[in-house]
Length: 106
Image (cartoon, rainbow, N blue to C red):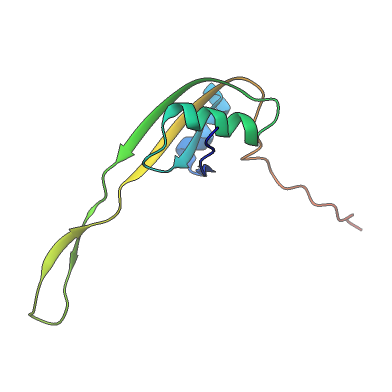
């Protein structure tokens, strides 16, 4: 059982997917496969059953850089990232829950 590091993405699109389709978006390592992601999500969050997973690799954006005023101008790219769209059949993950204040108002 190889567990990988998955972190939830807190974006507007991810929030819309959670409320409408029970689909959660996670950042995952580039070398992680779907079986590893499924095992990790089900072990990290109790009472959750994964129905399906879709993975997307986003290419890094092209960035211009310069070392000095006129020397060595060039282009490079940022790191590639991988996202996993995890649809659950059972359970919920508390990602976008609002924080409740425990202070009493006077």
